[in-house]
Picture 1 (cartoon, rainbow, N blue to C red):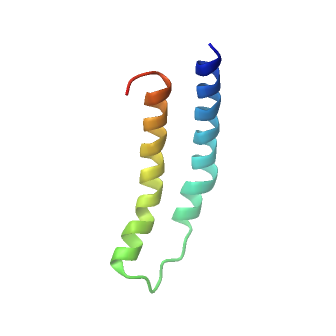
Picture 2 (cartoon, rainbow, N blue to C red):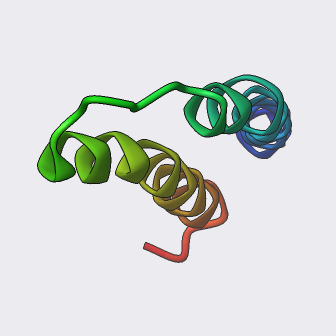
Length: 64
């Protein structure tokens, strides 16, 4: 029970962190003068954090 409770708490904190810090920071960044490759890699940060969140959720509940 302790493992599932701790996992749910960490999942909730991760969602809050990604939604309030990571995604707005990435979206508000000024990328003027950057190359296309730099802009693409920087844009993938939010996508990769969402994938990490999904992976964490799957591992908490034993789906992976």
